[in-house]
Length: 507
Image (cartoon, rainbow, N blue to C red; front, side, top):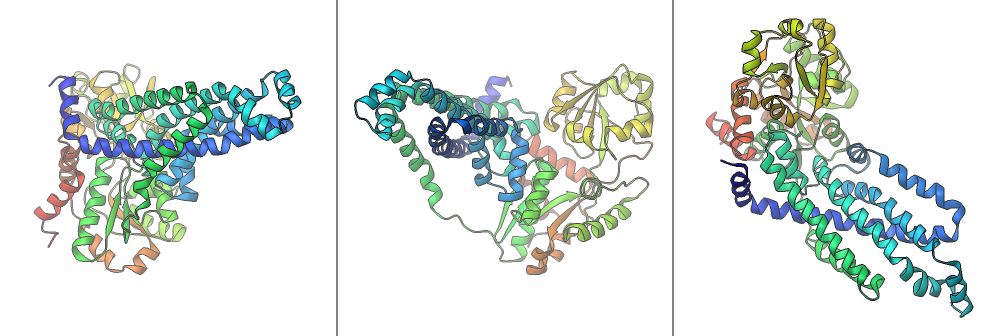
């Protein structure tokens, strides 16, 4: 199927999801813009009256805008948890600078003679501001508002990583699955949305009494968009989280099905929350109650320990004890499959160089281009640095890649070697060769439920329910389920329920 038809088919299938995501995106964007205007516009006016404070305060707004958006969103979790509220606050912070600076500049650059004439006519400072300064500064102010609006709409796509929804959900799904159609399904409406709001704001600027018209437009839009959120949402007894990938999403829904099948608890799933830091912080602050974590990730990333020379049982027991001591968290029993790190090459490269083990890469280290995820490049004990130390070689050309782009990069020949997880679906889809870890560098990565101790104290029955999966799910089972989600576009909730029913885990 050609790309256009593939996109049109996906558009037809996902119209309901697209409309829901679009509405969430509009809601976040308008609320953030209105918040930025309510803060920056009065502050910009005030700074024109107290100019000695102008540069330091505008400088603070500039610093806020230089913080990487993902870092700011992750930082917000510590104080505000996950969801729309921290996303809107972060977006508001990003939008302050253009409005603040343009308001200050627009009013300050009005000809002093005009201001003096208005004062000479008996106008009070407030009346002069309303009748003279704001109308004359309006084009400059509106340029700042338009800039902020475009900035907000673009940055809001990353809010999906902290459970805020929006068009970023579709884009992240596309990146995760290396599916261009999904990426376009989110990116095209985002671009159209930015152009539409820019047009509305330009029209507002050109109307008579533009400042009043702008206020009416923004107030009306805010009331229309926020009205659905005024209806209280159904409260969940438990919230199960998951990282950005098919596998955590599947496991989170398994936990949901098992819990609701055995109890009267109402369970909500918040999957696709980004990387380990984001979802772990969400667990600590109480925005989620449970999430599936890998033994190797918990031992290395969360406890900062070196698992070299340890087997699966030793890593799990050490992690379970360490995480309880350090964080008051409970780590239940792991499943059978081991989604450990691996290095993989395309079938063509594997056959051409007769590659079977990681050690076989040493003679050709300068001939191959490697594409590794940023997390793999950053991990000291079981990442790229550990590979170079254990195997005694390093590639001449190494590129950092988003996890979802690895398979696409190797398929297009941009890289020849990637890091992978042993249960990834694309290993089967693209017929890739997984190289044997002959130095036994990579620790075991078995999935297991991680939850706060107070959650288990309140619901002790969860231990036996979630331990139903202990020792279950093989590497092949997990790979097949990942394939269904990533390449057959089957809903993770359906995949998880089918597995549980087929294996007799649901009543």
